[in-house]
Image (cartoon, rainbow, N blue to C red; front, top):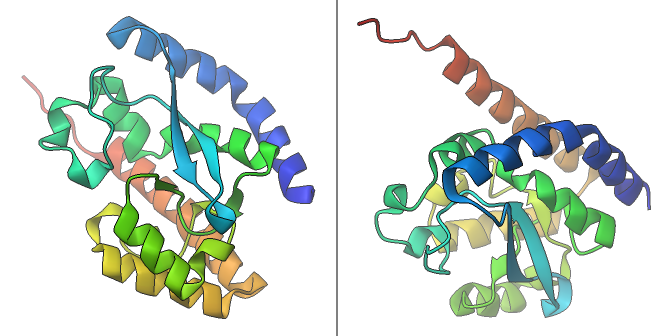
Length: 190
C-alpha cells in the first residue's frame, strides 16, 4: 500500500512534465501520447502496460531488440525520453493499479515465449515486475536474454531491503549520470 501511495504522489508531482512531453510528442507525431501494450506480470497475469510513446505510430509491435534499425522508428523527442528514462514514468500508473512494483524484473511482452518459459522454470514469474531491477542496472537492453535470466534469478534468490536499496540507488545514479553527461557535452560551434 505504501508503494502505491508513493507512486501516486510521484505521479502528481510529474504532471507538469507530462504536459510538456505530451505537447512535444503531439507536435512531432500527433496523438496518442501514451503507449499501451499487453505485458505479462506476476504469476503470468496479463495486464495493460503504460509508457510515454517514444516511437512512430506505425512502428511494428515487437520488443526493442527485435525492431530492425530502431533509430528510424524513434521520435526525436523519444530519443531523449528514452535516454533519461522519462518514458517509463507512466509505469507509476501500473504501480498505482497494483500491476507492478518499483523494483523487480521488467514485464515482458506476450510474444517473448522463450523468456516466459524460462521465467516459469526459474520461479521468476512469481515476482511482481518492476520499473527497474537487477538486470536493468547490469546491462539493460544490451545483454542477452540468458544473462537477464541469470540476473533476475539472482534477484529472486537474494531479494532483500539492502539489494533493493542498491538497485534504487544505482538507478538514480544512472539517470542523474546520464543527464549530467548530456548537459556537460560541449556543443559544436559553427
